[in-house]
Image (cartoon, rainbow, N blue to C red; front, side, top):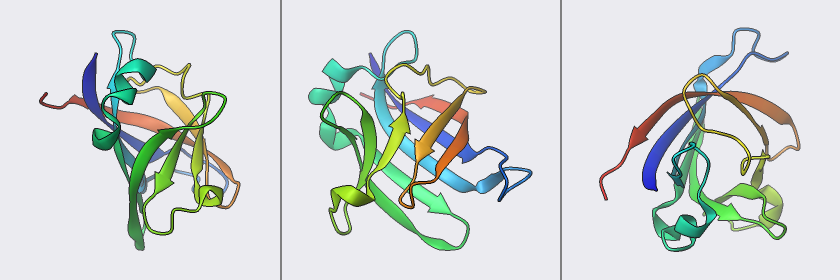
Length: 125
């Protein structure tokens, strides 16, 4: 297990036909040798598992990677702490986070968007 910084950028969709490098997330998570989030390691590294959401000219949002009841993963933002504003990763537990892979996130407005994994960088222990 090692802590990784994972950058996701918006893949093309109906609102962004070419995708966007200006819309996405950078988050920190412990990944196993297969590139999947390691739930056991996450438990002892929760405070390091941060997320930063960037979206065009909107203010950035900062929060944490959290585990929801039932085992799903979500981004929980620090500003208001409202669980209804969490953004849930679709099957994040099953995805391998490797450059070129795609993942989906259900955003604040309940829109499911697809993102491309752009980089996965090791962080110092």
